[in-house]
Amino acid sequence: MAVSLSDFDFELPEERIATRPLKPKGEAKLLHYEKGLFYDRHVANLIDLLHEGDLLVLNNTRVIAARLRAERRRETAQGPVSAHIELTLMNPTAQGHWRAMAKPLRKVLVGEVLHISPDLWAEVVAKTDTDLTLAFNAEGAELDASIERSGQMPLPPYIAAKRPPDAQDRQDYQTVFARHMGAVAAPTASLHFDQSLLDALARKGVCFCEVTLHVGAGTFLPVKVEDVTTHKMHAEWGDVSAHAAAQISATKTKGGRVIAVGTTALRLIETAAQTTGQIAPYQGFTDIFIYPGFDFKVTDGLMTNFHLPKSTLLMLVAALIGKGQLDKLYAHAIAAEYRFFSYGDSSLLLP
Image (cartoon, rainbow, N blue to C red; front, side, top):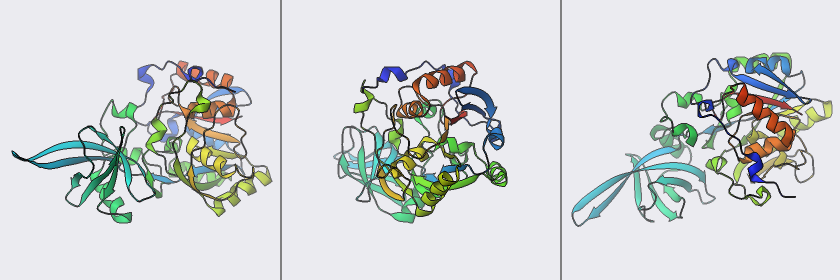
């Protein structure tokens, strides 16, 4: 059955796009949807909305400082020349290289060396019409440390267009439970949690499990086909440990609710349940595309921010709560002046 891209378009006033997170975090709005009804809450109200025995699934990926400023140096008949180039790392390759977007891209040559800092440089080993493949002069922890020293946080395009990243974003665009380096975009629903909220939920008997999905820059790519069922999703690397799978399974057995914090965590646990219909350990790439008609195997609820028009994330929400309810949810959020996108307000969806 065809699913039309135009059905997922909506008009959003420019001023509804948040460029900074609200402080303190608990004061961010939370649009609570349950049993067909909507309630205006705040993130701090999660303590009242979640039950003892519920399980929150958290994505513990860590965002790298993926925006790098590099210098191209070449010898010409007139002497050495240099030019600056902006790189945004997208995802690692199986060969240990990195794919990256570049501005400007057109003049960059395969075989060229891009100088980022005195101790960090990369050779261009491949090029397409859209991106480069880079081989860095370091790897592993050494490369991670060099990127952290040299780079800036890769703010989403709709924020970067309004202001440059700064030192505050190194804290704001990272979750408090970020552990494993590899994401180039944050699991943004998780940005609403601070340690005091996590501790309060734990005291109530709400449980937590951690999974890892390294969010790629492809999360911001637009859908370009009118029949979205023909859209090809980007692949991202994820890991559901045996311990996490056991926690999820035990929660289901005991009648607790499995609530994904963010679409990334949801996509990963549903990937891990696709083979048998039951949650199982999983490690590898996933390109799962969740749109209306999807049969959820694990997820009972979702906490998620408000997403871009015509995005795959919007389609995922429609799959969970229904297209009609999605339209009502977003109409209400716009009318009630909720803040949208990565640094914006959130929702708790319990269909």
